[in-house]
Length: 493
Ligand SMILES: Cc1cc2nc3c(=O)[nH]c(=O)nc-3n(C[C@H](O)[C@H](O)[C@H](O)COP(=O)(O)OP(=O)(O)OC[C@H]3O[C@@H](n4cnc5c(N)ncnc54)[C@H](O)[C@@H]3O)c2cc1C
Ligand code: FES
Ligand code: FES
Image 1 (tube, rainbow, N blue to C red):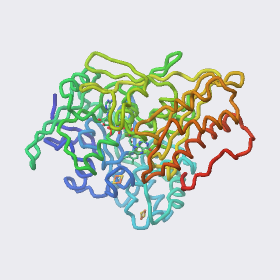
Image 2 (cartoon, rainbow, N blue to C red):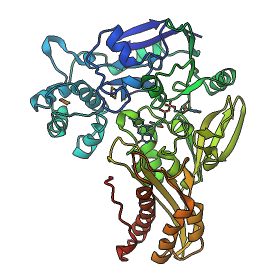
Image 3 (cartoon, protein in one colour):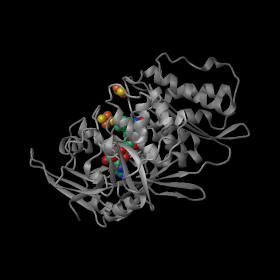
Image 4 (spheres, helix red, strand yellow):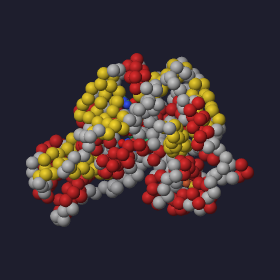
């Protein structure tokens, strides 16, 4: 066990002792170290003003990702390399190519968003990412700029590789050596007495699955922390005190991906950024849907396990995973149990998870012949927005007839929920305009959606029906009249 957090900053190993485990990296940078280049806009992962870059060793190479410092707890930095906008500072006023390109293209006015934009582009630069407009729009979707506008920012990013490569700083091998020297062999265990309340706060970061299950078994009231894109906001927005936290971020192989002949196994700790292309290669609509979860920074932190475990009725992964027929694997100490993912959600805020149990992995069947898989998310903005409604459809169509149907919606009930009446109305029938019309009506038996700030009840129902119709049209390229497409009056993307 160890109680010191170690990370690399500007080529030096930093050691931080006796830290409040709930201290965010952003607050640490700004108030303890006066590194005020990293800004706070929203403190909830939305605006990107706090973007920093993290480097870490993964399977023999250093991987870089842009993330939001405002919802990252400082202990999550242990064993990693941190780069802030100040890390790019060169000698004699020298600017990094990303910065020089932004200057040359007049891509900053008030400048508040600029450090975050620099860091998002810097991560992309380190990863030698492509610079077509669509990719850059995606890279910048988690960075709000209210006064410059994105045209000059994108134009600058398109030419960032044309500038001379930066000199100085650590080479790849030196970074790897330094990172290797701060990897720990035992669990990080911090205990900190809160000066205001006297409460002893604890933070554990196990290294192996066995250590994790032991730690969760021993502290079954602990908050499990994965990417922190939900849990971070409990602290920054709800001001909750987390007495005991168990972080899964350093657990070896918790982000595993196992391909068998008929299934894909995904570790609960797999981040969206890691899963997007892989899942998309089997289920293209799953990849496209993940691309619309949060922003690059959120997808670089948020995990699939966290999306399942938080139990939200609008978690975007649930409709696609349930429609695909995913099985959830829960673990408590050495015992595991499996269930169809849809059975995990009992009612609003209540899931079938016992104290001491955690989400270990998800098992998905691979797509099979004659399968139609389609999914779509409806939200007010295309990027960086939570669903009003999300629908996923998985049909087996043989000889023009529906042989199997799994339909799941998010945003239509208190939990993610299958549309059983709608599925039943399709089973065994001709995959046709008239049958789909009946199935659309059957959705009224499945759901009584709520009205809230995202959408009204009638909008949700109308959209849910239309999504099914859109799936039918997409599959059949059908030229039938559009008279069954109901009009949704609210404006959504
Ligand atoms: C700006 C922003 C945009 C977002 N956009 C979207 C979006 O478009 N779509 C969407 O669906 N969500 C969105 N989210 C929500 C969030 O990103 C997801 O729910 C994410 O998947 C949570 O994963 P995490 O790893 O960050 O979980 P954490 O925040 O670490 O944890 C979430 C919950 O899961 C529990 N938990 C985590 N891992 C496990 C485990 N292995 N076993 C048991 N319990 C566990 C935690 O205790 C907690 O209750 C957004 C969040 C932010 C801040
Ligand atoms: S301060 Fe807005 S994303 Fe962090
Ligand atoms: S330059 Fe002002 S918000 Fe972007």
